[in-house]
Length: 365
Ligand code: SAH
Ligand code: SF4
Image (tube, rainbow, N blue to C red; front, side, top):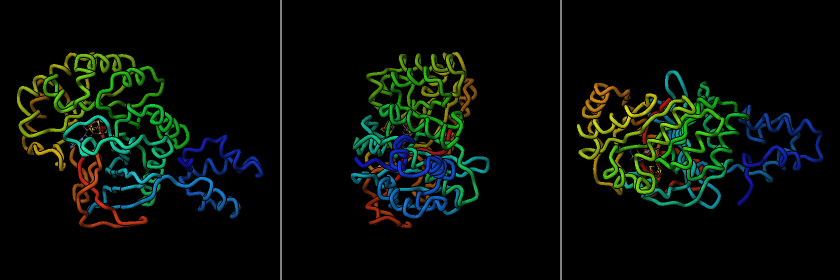
């Protein structure tokens, strides 16, 4: 695979600029990470050098579609990677903060039946640079809109804790070089316990979101197959250890599926799992987005609110998250091929074959 712009280390840039005065490396590094600039736009660099960099270090992401929601608060990207896989990135502008939802893999091997990415299967891991570049692209767009990107959630395509090395490397870059605080970065996992344990030991204070969706093993085995390997008792123990060690925010994601995990018994089971934790966790409720491969529908909003109220009565903090940007198929979540696109701004080499819906919603921050 070609080494891409945001995959190159500082030392590699140094080698590439070996014939230049030393301050050029610093100029370039700051240009890429602090100014979020493209090398071609770094007019402090000599023109010939800019041309050389463009060839030696190509951008990783080709924009296939950029779509802005009607009210302008959500921007969804479909990017193509080297090799042809496509990933989704969603920029969400809230009144008080700006968040980007990034993908960590093209596809996903975890096989959750309700998730469009899971239905499509796994294609490949993203490199650290491919992840960082999603943040850079979103940051640039936010700036164009006179806003400042401050939060990153790993809730796009893929399972971040199945691509740990590259995800951690990207987090380090996002934190150290782009300058976003670790407390503004959230890793969402389906519940890969070894990864949660390593995250617990990692000094960086990133937030953790665990996609729970069911609080008994029978139902969770069905919704989230990896539960067979890491059943709820083991998962909750890892969450408890995380809470004690970090004192950081832990949230549980719960995609509400009509008649499946939105019953009174589900609220009780979930509340009892939460109450057993040493510190409070926060539950995010999101009505399931429809996907082509899963026939059951999302819970009606009224019932979602009732479920939230019930959890609160049972002593659990819960928030209803709205699916953002449904008019542009955006909600931060998954991408799969297949559905026709009705309205779009096509920028890249060829029109999108299909941007499909799915995914979640607002950031847990
Ligand atoms: N693999 C990680 C992160 C990416 S998925 C994880 O599973 O946590 C991000 C979130 O979207 C998860 O909470 C996931 O359960 C949720 N999700 C997947 N498909 C969805 C759908 N159709 N509707 C609503 N949320 C969905
Ligand atoms: Fe993968 Fe997360 Fe989708 Fe499950 S919900 S298939 S873990 S992306």
